[in-house]
Image: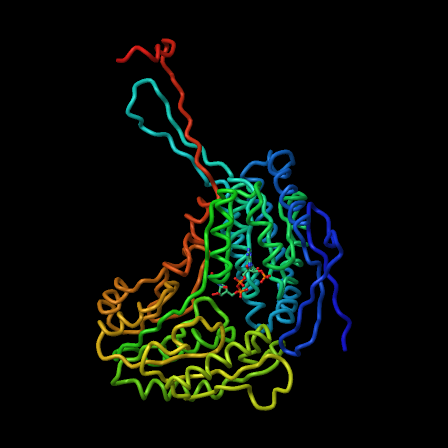
Length: 494
Ligand code: NDP
């Protein structure tokens, strides 16, 4: 067995253990073996990190830097990320089981997000208002909000951290990032790059620990002014409740049960690739997984046959291998949960078209076959619950109205896909879908320029894009009396 790698967390510019010395470990999903360990932050550690961030904002060099200087530091960080992409990708693959090809290209692309926010740092402008009162000059100033608490899950953690850290730092805030208990290592490595880039101590703190007490202490802390959370519904509900304590401004990026609608005039090669990308990319462990597929009845059998064929030829195996197409799930619990939901769905009448079990020959690790279920009614567990795994539920639809109604029949509203050659038809469907993102004739595309976020139980607020930067600022309105006469007596009405 290989030696276990040991990591520390970043608090106030120091790499530290938890105050009480407790530690957690990370399991490599491809082997099922512990490969790394790291501190388990408690309430006192979180307090130290938040206070350090607060000091950095109020007393340190960060508080005196110009926006242009902050932008340059973010720019340097983005360059360092590209230079260190291979190392970070290998760590992320070991930590999460994601394909090396995916972690490598995603890490490089995360640098683009940082570059975007680096460039935006000195374009944050206030306004002068043509106010309706003589002699008064009124302007707005955009200020950083304060200490940002950023909480991320284990999947795409670098990206999910960058869309919070980028705008937070560009706007002049300091941040405490809470990594996931399951896979914090790439974020810790990213912390080293923040130091190397020259970001002053205390501006970026990275704590590792459990949702409770670590995330709980962070989101209730009185010095936290802004919470950016990505994760599941139950933790999100707790985070909202916590904000009643400190009045922190909260944005939430939550789960999804996203529909893909395939119309009978679609380019079927695109549609099949969209369905595969939406369900089996990252082993289906994606918040935007298009896990409810609605196919028009007259092309249902044809599309299903094409999807089945390609699904059964997906190369499953070691995610560190360059030719592997699908790796394991991230945790053993995930594997068990998916097995249970698929079994319950088959019990409720869903028909297994492909997969439905652990791949033959995989004796260790948390592997699950890419799975297709044909369903006749939307109530089956596989169509209701976010699985976060490689499981696709497929339905027939007769006309567009029926497809839209079925697609909207979910508590979530994160993403949706439409495949049609008729753009007018696609636009009509798009207008009626209740989701924050709609992809037409493509799926899972993303960019730092494009707002990302959901409706309803998929959360609120947007990450990426110009508006997300404004969410890390607060507005101060400044009134100046320019009259030559002194201010009038308040009790003399004019
Ligand atoms: P969880 O909600 O379990 O965890 C997310 C993060 O919240 C973890 O860091 C977790 O800590 C922390 N947390 C848990 N409880 C609390 C609490 N009381 N207070 C503060 N923080 C807490 O989600 P998963 O890790 O299981 O991630 C999967 C979920 O994330 C899915 O629902 C998925 O859809 C969603 N997601 C959404 C995305 C989006 O952008 N919309 C993108 C990616 C994922 P711990 O370390 O203990 O786990």
